[in-house]
Image (cartoon, rainbow, N blue to C red):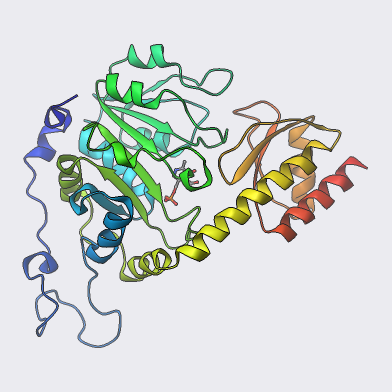
Length: 337
Ligand SMILES: Cc1ncc(COP(=O)(O)O)c(C=O)c1O
């Protein structure tokens, strides 16, 4: 898959992007009378449209070029952006492998794209042959996968042999023992890896997502994204988080150890029939009468996610603080008695 340009929509290739005031004059020295901003206040200036400070840090941490990074308003914005760059409405197709994160499908419906659904196998792995037999612009993969929690196998073989863009969603990668494929973007020009500050970095309110990809893809995505898609406050919060690696690591470690403790305690409950292996910050738990148990937890003001419509008799439980996990177990014991 060498010629990425052929996959890009013609109108996007020829697009003249908006040139913002901050694009035209890049220094922050001077008297700024160019962007119709208010001269008073602390947040009166438009933010850096290309988020250089944040990208510099990510670039050195992840060992990829700044030109290989795009910052989005959460990774949800990136999922949509990729469709708008590559897929002509009413014409192009995307592939999803359910059960998986719902937004790939929602955006495809918004963007009027055909959705080819190739379900995961019984052990929640990819149906490689069926995927490679299809022709589509984008293949969405999520590893570790939401809501199943497992990492997907055979990823590199699929990326190498798929005739379109592979969008690999690594929202939960920091909770996993598997290596990220960010280091492979040089090797595979059709690979886009997305990550987020919303999960392991604990900044879901901040809305910062990242795409790592070949520079050609990133430069076209930059043309299409809104000029000021990431606020100054968002950028600063993300930079601050990256300066505090010790807290980040100990927080992730605590969530992982709580995940194992919670798993053992849940397995001891009579009505729990299975817990799927998880490399994320949640557990997919199969139980008798999952919907009734889900409802009875809600009555006790403990909110989990009923996933029974996608994996029979399951609820997905996010790992909370040690105290929250204890409260969940207490509530489940009440349900049992
Ligand atoms: C797999 C996956 N990707 C992306 C997202 C959205 O992330 P963000 O908050 O960066 O938009 C989620 C949120 O639950 C998710 O589970």
